Length: 145
Image (tube, rainbow, N blue to C red; front, top):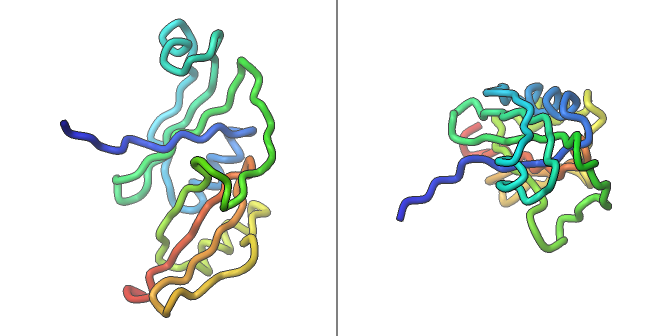
């Protein structure tokens, strides 16, 4: 049996805000759509499922994010996920220049949770809270800088 990761799906409060954040970091919009209908209800398991979606692609073509903003049923606000919460809680990106990536994130009001760590002079990395409270990890491989 073959298996391949297609994308990571993230529900967001404001689709345009999330698109702006991730495209400023370097992803590109691969597609946009509005989904609804019986097929969407069945696939997702929500009656009356209606959402606006955007698929964003990493520059290397290997990773995708699917962002969705619910029109119906209404999105449910939850407490921001903490790094030690059980379940899926972050999306991670390797970047060529963490300082430049953090400068871009700052233009969106997004800053490291605590600071930038140096792991054994191999990686500089940090977690930040992106749009809709999404935890985003940025890591720069210092061996290739």
